[in-house]
Amino acid sequence: MAIYHKIIGEGFPIVMVHGWTLDHQAMMHAMEPNFKDRSGWKRIYIDLPGMGKSDAKPSIKNSDDMLEAVLELLDELIPDQPFIVCGYSYGGYMARGIVEERHDRVRGLMLLAPMVIPDTDKRELPQQIVLKKDPDLLSNLTSLESEAFASMGVVQGKKEWERFRDDILIPSTQTNEEFVNRIRENGYGFTFELSQKFDYPTLIVTGRQDHVVGYQDAWRLIEDYPRATFAVLDMGGHNVQIEQENVFNSLVQNWLDKLESERLERL
Image (cartoon, rainbow, N blue to C red):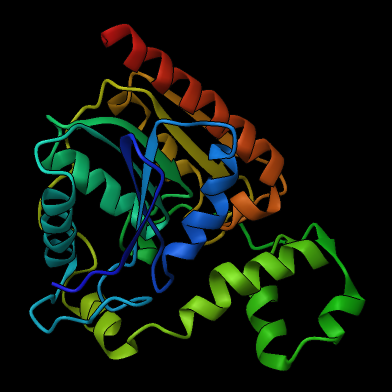
């Protein structure tokens, strides 16, 4: 199984899983600033099969298979070790699958704009809205760039565009479309229930204006995570980590502080 992964730092493993059709850079650019002044963390950024630099293996036909491929990689990289897992969008769905299957080893969880309900028609979503726009910026983009950014951005400024371009738009062009479409058709949702309660520090960050996965479906998970901090950020869409970068980083720092404190207490 050729799953591309990038490891930064040494210490307690923290696994980062990106969103649908993206690659590891989306999580790396969001999370690495939070480790600038921290040591003791081994960050594992992966490219899901068929995305980024990872092969589209024909035997992977649905999300169950996708999860199994990720678990195989983790069992190889960090065998029998406790670890933390972070997931963005579809990666959040994968992260919950990891908790379900490896609950005896996972010691912390972050869900960033998580996809909770695979069936788009069954999601509870706010109306799409733009709260801040730079008309000059949009007019200087290509039609493809402008259309992509306008379809996602709640805050449409220069800084947000550059992150969107680098973290979302460019990586999406590397995706094996035939492969991901097959998964969409054959089983985007798991065939099993995600029922595992999780009693370790958890952070769930959502965007108030996220019209892709919303925030209300994620809130309904709260009782499964007794140690969860749940944030709904205004002026934040599906790329809330880009549009509300400073608040997102503050929440991540608080979560990492808790994880570090609890690790020290157990030593």
